[in-house]
Length: 198
Image (tube, rainbow, N blue to C red):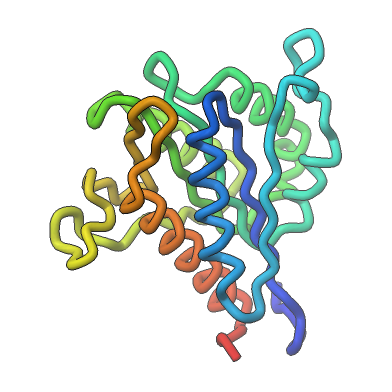
């Protein structure tokens, strides 16, 4: 699908947060994506009101993915995987999966945990499987861990963004990595749709 000249690409950041750390990362991802000329970025948060009798019931959020060019998923890693609230959102996308309505969209993901090696990779792997089922195209993080002069990607994840928090504090370098990641996804979306940054 080509976007007409002058049209904006749309990046949607769909996330669930428990303590606020994932929301801080989502805002940093937003700032990075929104900083790319020609990109319209938006953060959407999954909250308790979206879950009714264990099922995700916010169809407007699902429709927002239908109209996005790129989607960035985020949630904390809890008990070795994606949060139940995010999983409820994913489960609710099954009708869209059956119709492959998200096929060809770019997708990326981020997660945070309280331990430096707290099985956060399992959450990113879950996101990639979800994206693959939908026929989406995955975007990883292209900063070699331990080699960035600014210290970004300090935990060395390439599949997506992994952050580590202490209580409700997210290290500035992880927020900087998130901003970079958002910009990267936005740039890839523009490239995919035949746009260059004006």
